[in-house]
Image (tube, rainbow, N blue to C red; front, side, top):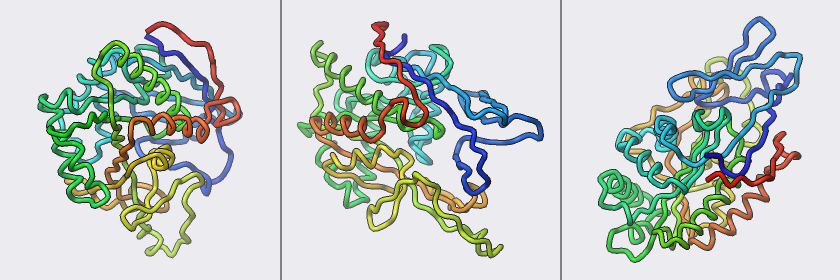
Length: 334
């Protein structure tokens, strides 16, 4: 069933040279000798294509918001695998997807091919205490406690997450394919807060004291290709977010995390248990490689509301940003 809003997003076809090319992980781009550029999106077990002729400036993609539904099961597993990084194999992704689907009116997906299409983005919250007796939730909590024990910035979680804690922590899972604009995120958070409010009014177990956002960041690795070819190093692409955490410069896979930090009790990064192959830029990016790390952000429940207001200001979903237009009509098809 459709969520309340839908939008159209213009993907611009830049005529700039190699220096301004966007580099994406998980998105393949190729050009034929003909008149079309082909952008391949790795959804489900197929490749969906958006094509446009070089003579045109843009293609128009319609975004729609939906409740999580059973046909999203495979798509959720793919998004979760991307979010959890190299440690995804430690978890039963299908069981996590089942938990998400059990919450029929909580959380959102973004699609471009209607209700039966693959989810391109997901945002939801899971009650860590309510589902603690389930094996998959126990594995998630045990993993978080283990990783918190390795990072001084995350050590407060050691008293917040145990079963005997009086805190009610909601685990926010937010992921999207890297070609999906950040501007889709604020409406998803806004809807989530509203849905939580409705659920609490219906006496459902979503009266959270804190929210823990599971995310990821990366560190840039200088290219060895530059050393072997004596090629000048390019600058990071415009819009890359940079901050310092645990003494290292970091960049955001999710630019909204920088806004959430301002409203957080604390945030920190952790190393994956599964070794991450050092990503040389010759294999990953044109000018630099990346080392991804897990990232956690803890906020008090009231702080998430102010954070969502800030997200709407920072990433406005309007005709004047990112080529996006909004249909402000609200659907009651829930």
